[in-house]
Length: 383
Length: 86
Image (tube, rainbow over all chains, first blue to last red; front, side):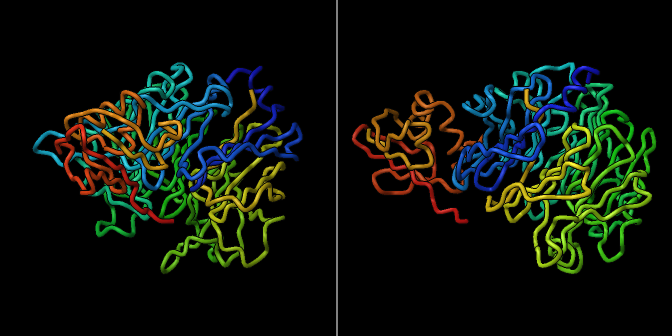
């Protein structure tokens, strides 16, 4: 990002792109981030897993949708959500040979713009796990054969469906190298490619997988979300089914930084969010992962936790949130940061509430309520 | 032949509930519908040519499980979106 565009991002109004189980909503903020005007619902009744702005052009929106009846597709808007056009060729697996049991995409789960040097190139992750690529801004999609026909057949015995199916998510592009990607598979683990997706290597050393009989597997883990710092791309954070981790490349060994979380809260959750300018600062949103895995706020007392030292310590940030009897949590795509100074944080809950902070998590306020179950929230600087 | 469209697909047919289309088989019928309403077939039929789990195709009142089901001009095809809850 150039200095000029960074300065712009520091002051630009923010739009919150919200995907829910029953459609999408866009919340348009004022300059102070205090007042939010809702635009929507878009695609009422559709399951919207992800709604993402292309930061390279500041105007293209892609939306991953399906309904209870109809198959999955991708919609595209070039006018900030006023009009939408369906992809001419949505992500689909190749036709199976007679000897194969062909796979079919059940939902498009994740959308990632590719490298800044590749305008109109996007990646999509699906359930069941599949990786797809578009060269035309999401109009047509093609399978990434190196994953779908290369890595996947090798590992499929350990790619097990979780509660939401087997998912490919967290498609992260190294800002220094367009061919260097990370992906997360739930369940399956973290994998890396340095050749644009032709070949892949597992990257799970040090990560626990207490649900597998093998206590030190090469893959088969359950990353819930990966994050890569844009200004320090060698630094990765991971919120996993088995804790919070950090990895500084070229190292290969993840460190369980969640060990420093309070023991009565634990380090289980879905999202992890990074400060856009400070690689040592990150936020998580813990959930109850004990016994039968309630997947609600621990003790019914929701809170974000922030680290400012790369995970050596964590501070609870709950001012403004319900102090008790709040049994919701935050899904993996539903917690995000903007690029403003101070950083704004936003999350959507499984109970349909949208919350925000304009002081880096010191205090929170409810921006909207009574929405459907929220799957994704992303902050987009208004063009 | 007469084709009855379920409401989840009205976004493709501009709200048209019944229409006339041609085809010697369900496969051909769906291809002709997709030519008129691009993207419609994909929402009903997956990439392995399987009818999606919550879609049913009825020909003259009988459920058809194969896209190779032959059709005649006087047939009626009803596309049903089966209940999918929640």
